Length: 192
Ligand code: AP5
Image (cartoon, rainbow, N blue to C red; front, side, top):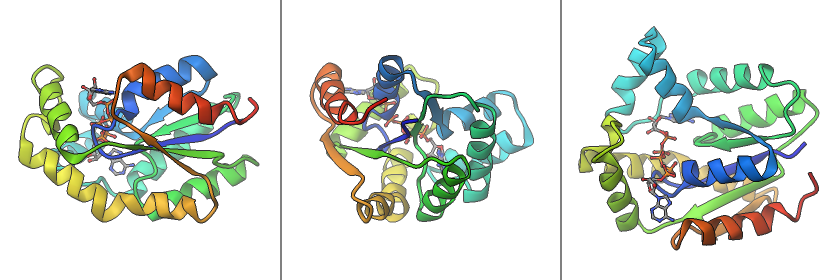
């Protein structure tokens, strides 16, 4: 089983590269952003509460996303491995994820960290906001609040996994294929 975290700030290309990585390596994609947007679309109480938080660019409480990931792991007992996208986003989420994987006698093998300049992130997200329908992409202040939240609460996740020597930094600017090749080079070092 191969478990990978695709890490990086908002707009760094996690969703784009996840699609390619799961197709190439047969991993199960778990994106907490996508799971939350499904709850919003279904207008569940969780979705309504989460939307108000996401529209400010803030993080949804740890217990909510940890619960979603725990259910998703349970729901996929035969997966070859998981690609985590947008999770974990705090140290508490990292510790919880390690515990959940330990229960399945497995662990995170690799954290791929995409590095993109702030101006490029803002440019990409404003551009996507023109067509995506994502309310957190249409306002530059909200986009910048998401990036601030990343620096305040999420960048520590990389520090957490660096202690276990699991982090590889990957340049997240260039063509989608160039970045995918750089990511694949790291994944190929592990046997599937
Ligand atoms: P989430 O859905 O995880 O969004 P995000 O981290 O803000 O990331 P994005 O989806 O915006 O960007 P991405 O890195 O996936 O890049 P993408 O490939 O889409 O989270 C949304 C919200 O949910 C959070 O703010 C929070 O409120 C909540 N949430 C989610 N998870 C949570 C958690 N664990 N804990 C607490 N709260 C949580 O690309 C972006 C754009 O750039 C696209 O238009 C794409 O086409 C383009 N692009 C991609 N690659 C390139 C390239 N190489 N060159 C040019 N353009 C490119």
